[in-house]
Image 1 (tube, rainbow, N blue to C red):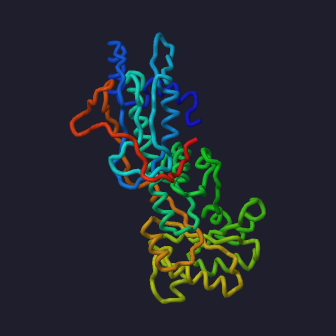
Image 2: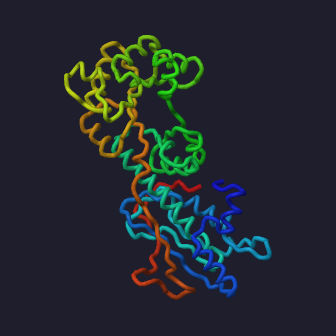
Image 3: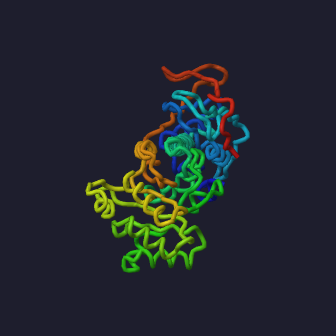
Length: 356
């Protein structure tokens, strides 16, 4: 379920709806206008990954109807909904959904279903681009800190539809029972007087999960990684580099005499070489901090020995707006100038079907 009882009550009362949609519903109800329309939904980006369809279907199920003397009259069964599926690849101006029925029953839901589709499709599309750039390497969705926490459940599902199978909060995994992963925060290292080894040992003692050390606290990733590896040995599953983009790692500057800022291919290659030289070939390297599609493609082009990419705000950026228009009233084609009825079609016969 996407909506709880409180959500449903607010949806039905038009709490989240633009005022003019609520006014249209009021007018139609008072005029007893039950004309059947075809509402057509589309977006303008090419090769987007459609997402949010399941959520919209539930929205229509719980929110279609009207109030009569403080009693909700459910009219969902009087709608016919034609739609594509979560995970479908869609083109610009391609119709993705037709809602057919008396407009008065669902006029107040337009703000909501367009917003759901816009948000989920944006994140699913961004996720697919990131996954493609990573060329099969694991990507972790670190989108928790870049937006309102109430978006996490839907965002995590959208990232999954886009191909990301690991997230960082339980909320993000709710709708698909996904894998939740993480290391330790810099804050824990700070509380332990800046001692990364001690913090990682505490992790190993109390947390039953893969042991991944965060190794950039002292801005000396190579030495810190070696210290942790020599203490934990085979227990250490991986190390994560999260060097700020305005810093040059001390290890790297000592070794090369050059200033390579942030997490960069030279630093990762040097870390991999050092770990292997000291017989820690099993230790994985996770990178995070400012990664987007272009940066990952750059790392892959340079054959950087990264095992896992952690990506955050890049997955939430951009626009993927949806638009809805009435294109038929009854059986008559009738739409605003420049819009017309389009049949639903799919780009690929072997589509990715995620709908429940």
